[in-house]
Image (tube, rainbow, N blue to C red; front, side, top):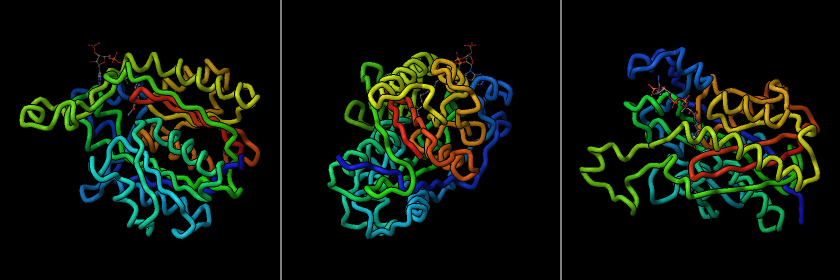
Length: 326
Ligand code: ACO
């Protein structure tokens, strides 16, 4: 099997910054509660004229530029999102003409916050088998349009953003050492959007009951998140013959700072080796890992030869780990 590399990364965050103080004016919450319970201080919210595929296309363009590839070089577009432009067609199809990729295969994957890692793992397989040379993986989210702005238990957490990576058969960035994916649908109702699909078609009643918004049992997810992310990390480390001591940076999905602290403790990785930017972006689901990763690359924290653990957990439930040597 051939090697698969991360050739370039790009991100896009909408301009509008919404602070915890802005939320204080809209729901019964406080800046102190949000910071203490989640670590979030502010987040980005998309402009009314933007859609998810716009955010993704911006991030994808930056990733292609960083990778030094053009539209002609891209063989496949994968978009991970839990907040698609439309149910049909895929957000990848809406995004495709914005990137000059018409005619190239394009599809979405639905793995919530683990979507970007799932996308990387799929791209990795296509590249390793020699089927494709360059796969564009995009994690794009506009969670602000899928959440209930009156539900304080979720609205203060979620936000908008996008990240992208070019997974390539040619080196230049990071080498993917391995990937591991998991899902357990018996917990589907811990985080879901009940109406609008075949299970509960859209009707006046579903709208009246606010069933077209995410519903989350945060407390229950919290407990499973830490254990799942630690377990999948250990499985992957064993598979590639490494140990926790070999991890230079953990780049986790940014759902809650307390989850990240517990994870670092469980893996015995010091807190200053965890890339955290939840305070500025909130939970951007499939976009959160590339948003954190790109920041740590640009500010020089990640050095050549560093081993990076991308680890995520989200609705599905889904969880995953990817190891990259930069
Ligand atoms: N402001 C003030 N009080 C609030 C707020 C708020 N925004 N939200 C909830 N509360 C209240 C609750 O009503 C409750 O009040 P009560 O004790 O009077 O009943 C109290 O705060 C405690 O609520 P908990 O839900 O127990 O709070 P917790 O400490 O668990 O924090 C949170 C909630 C932040 C959601 C946390 O559980 C969490 O982050 N869970 C994990 C989320 C996650 O990992 N999701 C998966 C990935 S996301 C994705 O896939 C898109």
